Image (cartoon, rainbow, N blue to C red; front, side, top):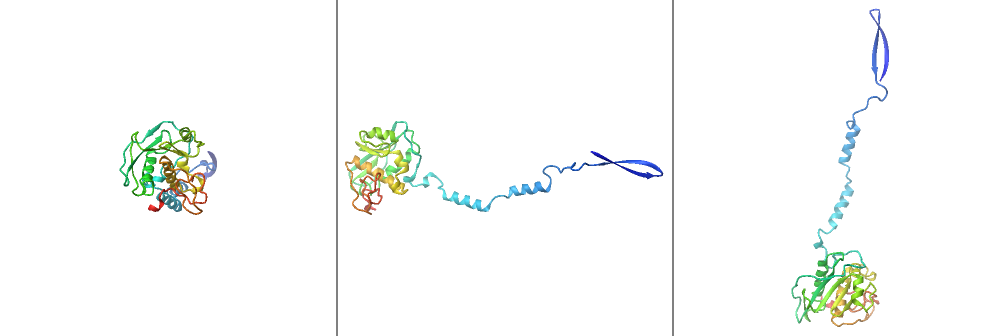
Length: 256
């Protein structure tokens, strides 16, 4: 602290007065107590951007509240894989008889270790095969999901390596699905990604994929596009090309 000396005369005597003077900048306001600090705290408390809040609210409103809000045929959209555990499990449970006519039973199988929910695939298969536009053909036959080894047909979701192994000697090359005996073997990568020429319509592609491979288990062979602009027959190889036809997943689309 600097000292300044002042002189004054009192009753003829010289008296020295010592006055303490603070050095420049020697006093500082207590931290956080100045007006600046108060304003900063106030700014932090009310710094939310109304436009950003509105945008966040809109995004939250656009998101489904739960997985149940997503259509069955669009659930479990996952990343592609090459392999999984190699172990196939039959999905437990027995469904209701869907449709009329002679009964055709089917079991749903999923390879363990695949991403996504196995129950989502099960629900999708059941929804597709139970539709009157599918192989039941609105009364030609009825279908029911079972979980026994004696099912008439089996629908399996598997990794590409497993598909290649189960479909041999047919060359699926890690890309396409196949039917082997009474088993429709669905390639997981096609299930989650579809194909480019379906223009992002994964729902239609998934319907096609199930109906096409199940058709093979029922003895149906491949057919060609009947004419440009027409709905592609379900037994056309739509995974490879539409041949000028329009994408279609149903066996009998006119059943409505």
